[in-house]
Length: 309
Image 1 (spheres, rainbow, N blue to C red):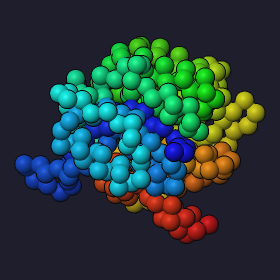
Image 2 (cartoon, rainbow, N blue to C red):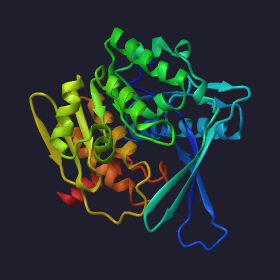
Image 3 (cartoon, rainbow, N blue to C red):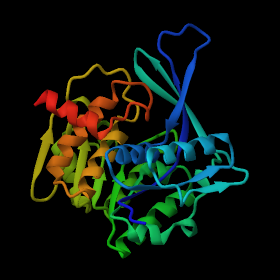
């Protein structure tokens, strides 16, 4: 089986608050978890994606398997825990934006360890993708991320790492230490501007890009929200401006961006072409509610690009 991308991390079933509701609040169920969102995004853009994750042997775990199968994400390497549950989270909205409440302690995904890693899968893939959230959910999972990166390097598989910062999971000092150490070993480091400002103490986008390049990341892809995104290497850097759309929910926009970006990279596109494409995909995903449902297809991104050209 030929796989372009392996996505390693924690799936979470999502309950998103519906707008305009009086109490009691109503929620729309959906799917979340940054690496799962990433996998769906990359698959919708045509990449052959495999998800590596642990799920509970519960209804929510069944729903994730059904989702990935429907999206064309390969599930052969999914492991089901007999007692630990699939994690869940709630999204609430107010005048300050969207807020997350997580119920993931002791989840099946948090019990992964380095001995569980599918070396053959990582060896055969073009790219391994993981995130700081996968680090943060447990010590065993943190060790597994470093071990997965070592396996990828052993087999000349590219590595992308999203610095997704969730301070409900760990302290800022520990997050800094682990994220910065990981960035030293990856081909693509994917920070978001607001989180990178906390992690680095820097404010300027170019200085942040330089910081991660100096750590050892070969390419930095800095996500800047409505302002667009930047790609930086030691030899060049370029940006793509944000697009004005009718945004209703930015949940998962960064994951959509990353999945779209790497779908283009594994297809042989240049980083500049991938950046422009991913910027359009991320804008489109903010026009719907939830992390997965509004992720656009290749045809939708192409139509959007044609309209703005």
